[in-house]
Image 1 (cartoon, one colour):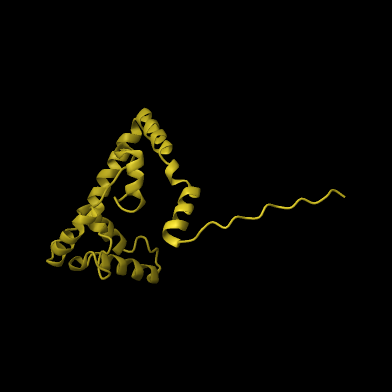
Image 2: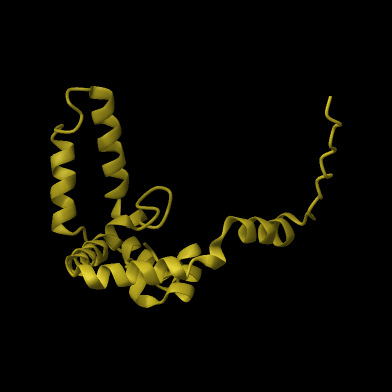
Length: 161
């Protein structure tokens, strides 16, 4: 995944080896957007090939509405001077694509080593206790929502008939 949101905490708990991170970091975004506004936002040839196949209509299967929507999405992504804005590639997908491909290649290589994959999987699973739903909901209630727990009354027992 990208190095944002919960992935930051998950990586802190599980370690660098248990995650496959790709994409730019938050502090890199302004410079990427600046270069893009000057027309420097290259599209990886592999991604361009995908765009070309989609534009050919291959995935729309004759559905003109779907084809129009697909092409509109690609047109927006390819508005290179607006990368990082709602008028372009808002989430910098084009920028992050080569990094994603490299990360996926590392996933494939790591998975091929079954013992290493099993070890990393166990390590990752063992480091997830902090992310239990009970703890997360309790923390959100206190920190984000500002609410206290409301104890549920104990059930009453009825006499046997």
